[in-house]
Image (tube, rainbow, N blue to C red; front, top):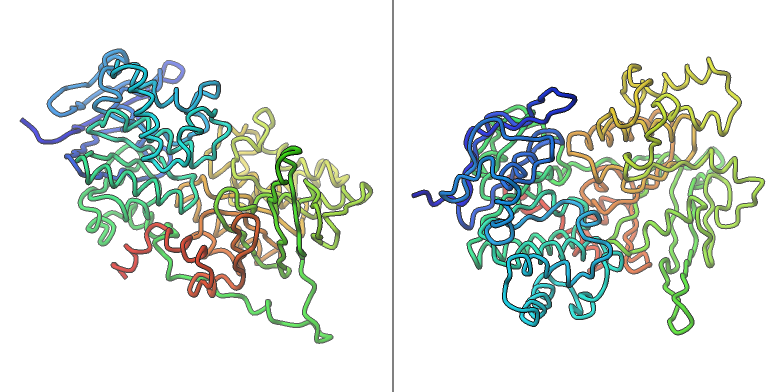
Length: 546
């Protein structure tokens, strides 16, 4: 009789597309015991989520196990139907999905969503279920659980929604908890809280955790063992300290080189041009100057207005990168939207690329849109799925210039080369490209009209570490070549430390600390800043292995 909670032996999984079976997982072996955390790491398409889904009967309709076995304890669940798996989901297996925005029923109250697993498995009566729901919401750190239980998903932040999913996953105290990129899109402090909660469950109840992640820093901090997947195969596996401390496989070494949280000692040099005056002895005018910006939103007659930005000020010298960091709700995206001229400020001013974004006349709007471009977080939603890549990249030329067809084609090919994409993508649609390729297309579109300022709103947070490293390197190279100024909005402090010259830390609408990135990170003067930096995953592991 095995003491393993989960055993995956020689697993093979294929997806059928157009009548052709494409292998996604090949010969994967994994073993997970009580109280153990096994991290499965790798890039998108490596097979890590497919492996987890195969182990829980959650494969897509066109996916099927074509070889190997999956054991839950001594129970062979290979090839089980969804109906058979329903009997063990929630009771023996808890699943925490990646995206809380798409995982909760938008028309069902939070309390009812958590109680559903209890109701399906006929756990006690309605009164007992309601009591347990409130206890679960409290245990996962949701304030005022009695109020939140009556609310709907849209009334909760992303971090709170993820906690709701955890509450549902642990409701019946399963022996196996599978977390599929469960914290990848969360602020570092919320991420730490959720990972601490999962760690508590492991220690208190012996829960085994299968952690699917592309974040090697999280794996380094939180797992006992790690399995590195690439192209559907396990390239390396073993104790986390051994695999990440002395990686044997080249692919593992590449992942480690690309993980910003595991390279905290490597800081960019703050460029001397920040201090160099012009020929007249004056410092050059900043490309972005935000002065005492306030933004209020009405909450009705009975409540005070919500002050999303409260006296925000900062300057960004030409050709440098300034980051705005903070948790969800800190006001960083509000400030970015004011800089872009998308929303008016209640008071204060923002002068961007020589124009006052907070009081922009209609006659200057067209020119402003050319000089100030935006790269969104999600390349899935920011690119028209019906247009070709060539048409998408050329769109700013059609909007802002009267370039001939031949000139436009030449400029598209030139910028395509700059972002390291082959000409063969020009005729494709966004759905035919990877996430990293789509983000390169978004950057190419933003840069083709030679803007002075580019605002990057969480532009790399959804990418695998290897693709992320490529995009960050690309941004730095393009800045050096073109002299473009970046305003970088991010909750990923490890990335900010590598990319930004200067940083503003926001908390509840206010800038609580600002300065050169190295100074702020190495010697934070504000308690909130210190908490953010302490929450960066991988820091403790890096110190122990430096």
